Image 1 (cartoon, helix red, strand yellow):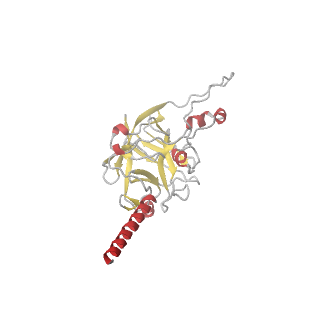
Image 2: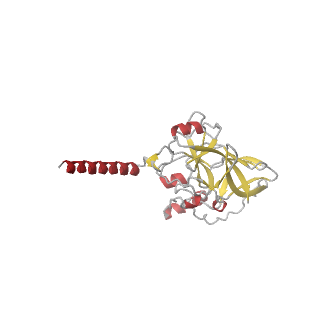
Image 3: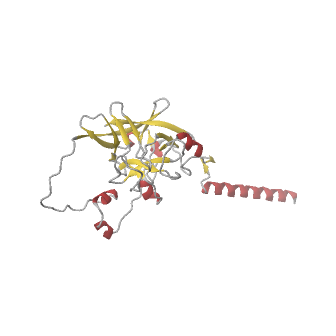
Length: 287
């Protein structure tokens, strides 16, 4: 009898342990056998970018009635063709804009500590459009931008992606950010994300414009698209976010679990999400 009772207690203990482990895994509390302390939990962390499943952000499909009344900018943001042109007579001639040169290339990611290459901003990403970097140049996001003829630098530039959803590459307010404002004493953060056309003008404050994170998750987040600063002499790329009051805070960029972030303080972010981060810099590589 004593042996039977011991066996029963052992079986009950094993069952309770199994139930506890199953609950923890299903609730996303564990990642790779340890408690998840990263900003993104419940994700498989891939050491080889080739093992990441290529996904396309979800799109919002408008009804036929809504399509007829959409502006061309809204139609393009949703992946629809523009409306047929309407002929208007006696239109005043348009003034030609300043001649510009268009550049196309990839974005290399380098460790801030020693300048070593981590790879390229990659088309291999989650369904909500959060960008990662990977070693394979074949999977690199292709971007293009324009500068005035003869210029070697520019600020507040929009980057257009030709081989992944967006079509603009910009910044979106992070899921757990308490506001759209970045600061050196705040853990508020931003995702590198796809932005729909027409995007936002240079220097504009955060706005609820189409972006792949909101479209995929249903969670409304503000965004900006004309955030890129370019130096063709060095290839260095930086980003500039504009706060709701029009101020332009100093922005740091880093990765955690392979995902790319920006914000006013990587240290405050790390305190909020204490999983290792890698500060990096971005560099333009012409094609």
